Length: 409
Image (cartoon, rainbow, N blue to C red; front, top):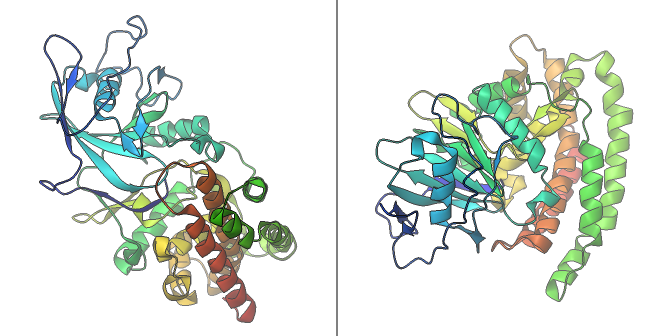
């Protein structure tokens, strides 16, 4: 999920917080009258076996899907429907009478709410945004998330419904802000955690970074907009972006890949890994008391090049404001991160070779999220200026292309 920052509304604030309650005589959910919430969908009574806390049907099981949807209206999750699916999916919640529903703000792909109930562990309900299947393989995402959950590397995978998922909530953690990514306090932990993630074997072993990006760019190029949006779309010069992608692919195969045989740094940079592919500040959760770092939101994760994943993370230092000239890490900062990632036995040459691959993938990353934003501008109902974000990423592409061509690193 692309986020500016992931945060909860503070307690007691005048925000959209619902109290939902199940009556003793029916499954009707009562709520604050100032909010209009739809009635829950019905579930075939024969679908589910009796809940068993010892062996939940849905836990870490991406093949089990509750045949019910949670409406997402103008970016807001239907609170009573969210509670209903939680009661059906999570055995410990099956008899919950009252729950507090708090929206998670900042998301521009999905709708998220946190449900709390006395003497119960909080859960997170994720409702997929409309048309996100165009850029996200939901079946693959759920398989991966369940696998990472089972390994203790992701929040608990509690179960699926037709257009979303119920997850465990990371109690005591908070999301980072973009300006914190460069701080040594967290930078080392992020690098170490990413190195651990890259040890997981991906479902596929051949990176499709360039081929997937070509598909996205072609989709973005062929979209039709109206009025001012049509002019802005044309000014992105997407046919030229496709040509540049071809050049970057050629440079990768001719100038980076051949050095893998004699350079540990290059070999480490371009090895196929399970890449997060969206490691922005809002997807990095930290626990202040212990210094623990956790990653969330694996919906763009796939087999990819290690250097691309790190290049993407470096670009996120600029946040959604995308002031890359000011916030993108300089060579010294990049190499400090890479040294932690590779480990203490890496040489200065290894680190420099790795960074060389990262710099090429920074350009690829701008094309990646620039094309993604154009597709979202056409299909997403969320109130966000996706075309503006595309413009900022293509401006970042021009900035970094000039920077990397004019001086090393």
